[in-house]
Amino acid sequence: MMREVKLVDIKAQYDEIRAELWREWEKAFDSMQLVLGPNMTAFEKEFAAYCGVEGAAAVDSGTSALLLALRSMGVGEGDEVIVPSWTFFATPESVLLAGAHPVMVDIDEATFNISPRKVREFVETACRLDGDYPVDRKSGKKIKAIIPVHIFGLPAAMDELMAIAEKYHLLVLEDCAQAHGAEYKGRKVGSIGDCAAFSFYFSKNLSALGEAGIILSRHPGYIEAIQKLRVHGQTDRYSHSLIGYNARMDELQAVVLRLKLKKLDEWNRRRKRAARMYDERLADLPLLLPARPDGMESVYHLYVIRTPERDRLIEYLKQRRIGVGIHYPLPCHLQPALSFLGVHAGSLPVTERMAKEVLTLPMHPHLTDEDIGYVTESIRSFFQNR
Image 1 (cartoon, rainbow, N blue to C red):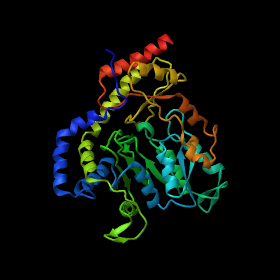
Image 2: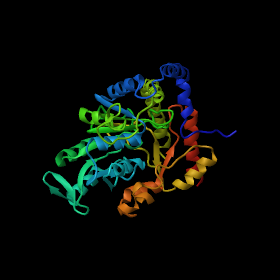
Image 3: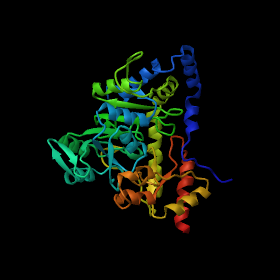
Image 4: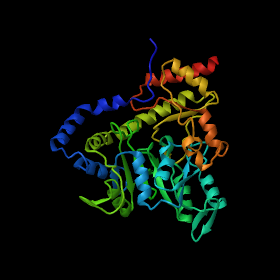
């Protein structure tokens, strides 16, 4: 019988915490304090400490985390935010929801992360300085922030990006949705920029059983603003100082996340081990494997390879019951919903080439050696018999 290997295995994570989870849920149900409860508050402190940051505000999703972080930093109408196109749609979408406009730049070919060189080129060639701040010559809008996305679990080049931000007085919002526990030169991602947004969508390295998110910041004022924004701008019951959202993390998801946080480092170690096995067993094939830059410790949310024969390889692996994916088949700048931004095909050549060549292999903490052996031997068979 042909083996099956899942792209992700969400149930296996649940099974590891099932018994303890239901005991803790019973306690939450007994209290019936299901929003802004003690588990949410405890998780905020525990996750902030894990990442090496003091301030945290838990919310209902990663998208809310991005949006509320931007609003807390004062990003809005008349502003532009530099983002990669090579990311999930929520990154530029959140900029638009905040009332600002995303400026999408190309990525580094080796790491898939936003290219500091392209960020600097945009600021220095497409902008003029108005006082200390860059202003887009074309739109007349002020460049307010950069959102580096630590894509697939690999940190972005934060030293270079922070240097650009410091020189031009830009804010930096780290999008850490795929990088829980990743490290940049010994520091956890989420502890470097002005704010950081995490998603706990159910397929993430640290995942809720549904949706949740969190914002981290070393600036108390941002966290205080987010704490109001997530609950309709309330200062106290029936008193609202600003227009906000219903974006609270519920207590049941906080219970899940507290239990899973205890296992995150071990689960990430398993991912890294699986990645090393992939690296070793695929090294001699005509593939481009994930980069391992010095000083950057990936947590391999995804294990993404590149080949011009991507589409044929996908079909071959699917026939062998191997879960595969494409992240991302249509970059954000080519999405119909963002066509009004006027970023046309050919504008971001590296991003567009990646969209035609990348392939995501199975990656989760519960992959067995036999699973990895089956996947890699299947890929080897494809190239031997093409």
